[in-house]
Structure formats: C-alpha cells, structure tokens
Length: 300
Image 1 (tube, one colour):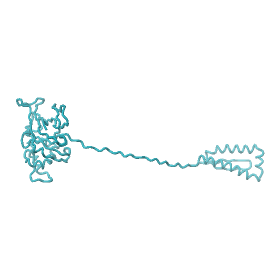
Image 2 (cartoon, helix red, strand yellow):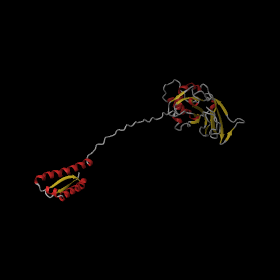
Image 3 (cartoon, helix red, strand yellow):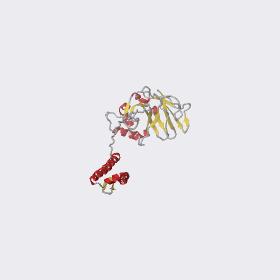
Image 4 (cartoon, one colour):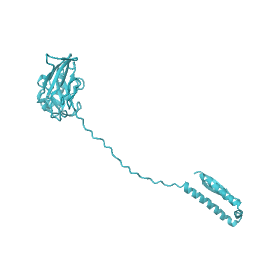
C-alpha cells in the first residue's frame, strides 16, 4: 500500500506518522485543528515550553493520532472473511424415453428373372450356410421346393437384389384399416398389400413373383394373404382379354405356413411369411417391354 508521510510540526517538536494515502486528508484536517487550538490557546501553548510536560503532550498527541488511525483502519482496511454459503441443488436426472420399435406394415416383392436363374443358383450353391442342409434351395426356377423352408433366408439376403444385378425389391404398404384409394386408384383393403407396379423392361421374359410379409402387419399374425390380383396396362390403357380385365391367384398354403426369422440388414428384421403360387406357375408372370404389370393383395 502506498504510504505518505504526514509531518506534523509544532513549535517545539515534530513527529512523523505513516498512514495510508486515503486517510492523509482526514488526519491532516484533524492535525491542523489540533495545532490551531494549541497555538490559539495560551494555556495550551505555555505547556509546549514546560519541559516536564513536553513528553505528556507528545504522548497525548501521538495517542490521539494513533487512535484516529486505528479507528479508520478498523473501518476500511480490515478484511472481513466472507463465509461461503452452500446451496443445495437437487439434480433431476433426465431420462430418455424408451423407444418403441416401429411396426413394419410393408410387403416386399421379389421378381426373379428367368434370364438370371443361373447366377442365382450359383450364388445359393456356394454361399456358406449355417446350419447346412443336404439339399439347397437354388431359386424358384430350379428349386427344390422342399428346401425353401431351410434356405429362403439366404435367398432374401442375396446381394444381387441390392446391387443392380437383379431387379430391386419392391415395397408395398399393408393398410391396417380399409378405405380410400391407393397410389394406383384401387381401394385399400385392410391386411391386403396395396397395388404395386412392375414397369415394362424390368424383366424380359418370365419372372417369378414372390411376396414376403411380416407377421406383425397381418393383425398380429391372425391374417393371411391368401389371394392376389394382377392386371396389365399399356400406358394408361388397361389390357383386357375379352371381358377379362385381370386375374386372381391363390397362394400356396404350404408355403405361407412357414415362418422365417430374418435378422439381416437388407430388409427390416422380423418374422415373415412367404406368399407365392410356387410350384404352380400362376404367379410366374410373362413380363415384357410393352406392358406394365400390376399386382395387389386381394383376400385374406
């Protein structure tokens, strides 16, 4: 702290007091008043010349100065320790809501072209299978049908569906209530997949059409997609055969009695049923370059 010297001078002695700078003006005024009183008072002034009282006056003056200084320091320079106040904070943990898996209400349509059956068979014949069965399913153009229940998961997971070597898997909505038109103008019926279009040039020639549906989308597995309906168009014109505008096909009840627990990453994980006319060739469509092929669920 910067200190200044306040030199207090009287007619017979001088005394130096070191005080904080901010107190100098205050003490100077007090000192001047004290000196003035001493000088103006003959009684007090005479005391300055009495030797035996000199020390008493010095002591008195020093005591007054020190007392004022002490009082000032007590008010200004004393550091009062501030007690820390502890405030209790009750932390509330934020709990993230538990996510509920979304219900998968979609059908997945696979179109296996006859022109690619060799590629399909080669893949399924060489892919590592666990557990391994004596007879392998090599696709719907070769079979055998008895092996479908053991090997269909490898067929679904075949990378060719997803890298362009085979037609992409088509998705269709499965309504949970009836009413309203689908994207192709047909009425939605609960637990029947909506109309899908297989565009012309998707496949040149025969194509096996098979539908995979999660059991959760069929009223908790109480419904079956027993029939489907198909028709063809050239542009916006419906192709008819006389009065026949389309065809209905019954699905193979043996095939849809099997369940398949898919745990891969090509389609959503879950338990599925397969809907197909196989081995009946009813849903082995003759696809071409002029007609768009349409199909939809048509009965439970």
